[in-house]
Length: 207
Image 1 (cartoon, rainbow, N blue to C red):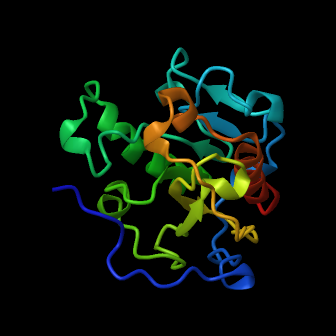
Image 2 (cartoon, rainbow, N blue to C red):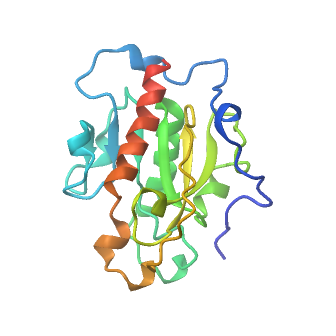
């Protein structure tokens, strides 16, 4: 059975409590002058990240060739980590991509996006919502409907960097991901992509 999210997580902390990084800076590399400030890895073709000035890695560009050197927004494949993982048929090595993404995020800063109930969180050592781990990362639960997704789509963000205020939109989206096509289910809303790039970029600005 796949493990769920960290047991008995605390309520998400807001604003300043989450915005403090460990005394050792996570993003010293950000002072380097580069064409791109943020990389976006494991993204779909035609992603909004390209228009946001990110160095993008889609299926045709192997994310494992990424050399680091800047914060990233990581969307590793999730079908091998979800509650229905026993029905999934991931490609060889696909499951390990999420663990690799966590390692890269912890090294360079940025944010990993994965489903709320992903087994990744337990396996990679996350300690609960709103609590910084020894790598300086913190797990934050969100709904993608806050940024325009047609379904609530419960998601967690693992952020190695400052955590901004969240929208906490009280309106509940009425769509159901089970009734959506694969592309719509997986597509990152443009507003959400912009938010995630801002999270990663704020890590660079603190370097």
